Image (cartoon, rainbow, N blue to C red):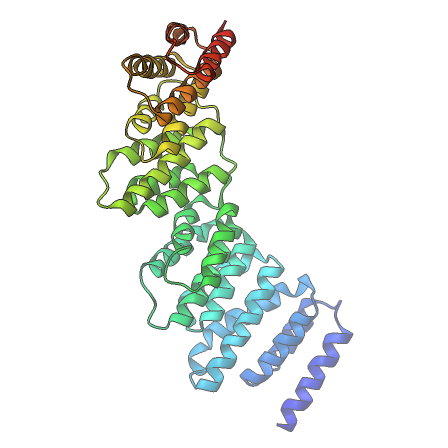
Length: 388
């Protein structure tokens, strides 16, 4: 014990006196340690210098400890070994010492201590070494699937993987981090996944489209679509994704009311994305027509009309024209109620937004049907004026 205390004093004194000395001095200091406690003391003093020039020594210390790991099998030593590894990994990450990446990954694969494994992955993230992105993504994917035997250890490792993937900013990390956000973990880990997800890729369209196509849970699909909407992806890519979601939302017959609402929520969000990104052309038209004809509620039908109006293309205008003509025929036949009038007025307003001449005959037909309220007639006249 006296020898250890004397050694610790020596370490502290040298750390203060030689903060600017060469890495060879630091190397010699570490090598004087006779046991794990002394190595830990040396590592603490070495890393407290906050000197990047010590990074090679720190990396060498990590390699040494990994080689000697089997000699620290006792419970006390194993715990101290893990703490020492954590300090070394954190320093290597903070110094962004790229040559240490293989040793850091060895920690992930070889060291049982979950905090050490997590810190090693977070260090790799700080290094931005994309060569390990897929390996970390696969590790997290496997962790997501079911609770670990030691839940606390599993959560620590998952947290480190999520943090690393957020820093690596590699698209391969998107899906496992996405699924980690509602996996078996505690709220802290899931919240970390939510925060990391937008950092991984400016344009996450490809993995999001894969999730939409493969995932059956409407809630997850909505969450994926929200991620696309909030991303920095180009408008055209967001429109592609929204069209896919809208079509998928109409493809499956729901098993119950809960699923029906979930699919409707996805379709509504898809329609909002189409509107906000000024989606035009024929691709969204069929989905919009289905949402109007078979929509879950009036909100979905009104959004479909808005998407058709903002689209403005000939296919969209043709569908909107046919809707207005059908509603006008129903009005003439005496099939009218407040909800029908509301839908008709919305369709007519969106005809004015479309500004497509295909809609003029339908609007003229409305103006010549005197059974409409004055509000509908005025709206039709305003839309005609917008087209002309």
